[in-house]
Length: 204
Image (cartoon, rainbow, N blue to C red; front, side, top):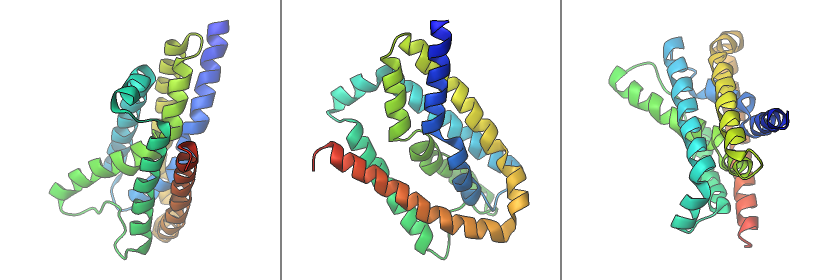
């Protein structure tokens, strides 16, 4: 029973940090102009990349950081800067950074790019999620708990993002345009919070 409760606790903890429900509005905004098949492909690629990243850091995170001479605060600063540049560029541009449903050769690359940045990282597999899986791996039954939590929560994230097609129809084109700009502001705020925590963590 101890293993069961440890796994449940790990799944719940990571779910809160992974926050696929919070990622969904960004996902909808970035894929507003593509069809259902393409949107599901973005969701699948994003979740797969996030899953691989989380597994790598859960099992080898401390080794990688020691090898490179970095820490989790460096990740927060880097993720914050990346997200801030992305959100400012999108908010101020008359041509949002969403994927457009034309020029099929370019669309495939754009879909993969958006899936990786910013959806997979830093929104899903961001500094908080990476830290969480590394800490879970250090607890009792750690590798089992961390691995199970990653699998379960990434599966939930995929289901949540797949539901975006239905929500996309409900919100409509105008609603998505408004949502996109609001999400840019929120994304910038998240980026600032990453930067503040990272800077505070390294003692500046």
